[in-house]
Length: 278
Ligand SMILES: [Zn+2]
Image (cartoon, rainbow, N blue to C red):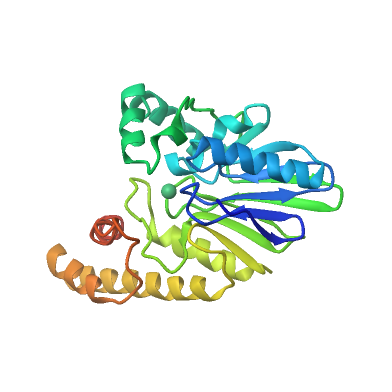
């Protein structure tokens, strides 16, 4: 694991060691973490490192959305307020019942690079929720959580206007094909979210997966997403079949999915087609 000091008061892990990226904003009197990855020992180490280096304590964990690779480390923040959107909280309740049974967790472990990273996993749920927006003020520093939808209906970005840093969660896969297949994924909301990210005064964008960037990869992703959705909509209007439309959409060039996730492209285009055709 490598802990990046993104800039003064902002830390992150984006090397894939925690699967989903994680971040810490150091505020005047406390530390706010965003997402908890799916490697319990590493997230505990990350928290300890930032606390020791700054002499401050973690108080809040924000969760961008409900996927296991962003929330399985929540228990490292059980003494903190855990804050997420109402939608994400509801999805986590459902997953806790259905998809995160002890047997299912054993399956997750089998697919982890090192199964011991999920030893003793307990799903820690949110202690506070917001419908669309939540604002935290500490001295003269603000942290804003805002739900946009896109990757999932609950997908929220967490940004600090004072530090000019925005954590986008899985609405950004930096220079990789995104995962757009979740049941509540929506390409139209996704486009609006990307436009909103670009409209803000941001120096560092932290994606859910991949490296920290400036605006450039977001511009590229926005162009791609707009091209794909326009093509799908135009072809639906001219009465083309789903098969023909997906074949055309497939040809629009963009970065491939990361290794081992090659099936993401077809599943994502199919999901976007389904949303645009209803
Ligand atoms: Zn996700």
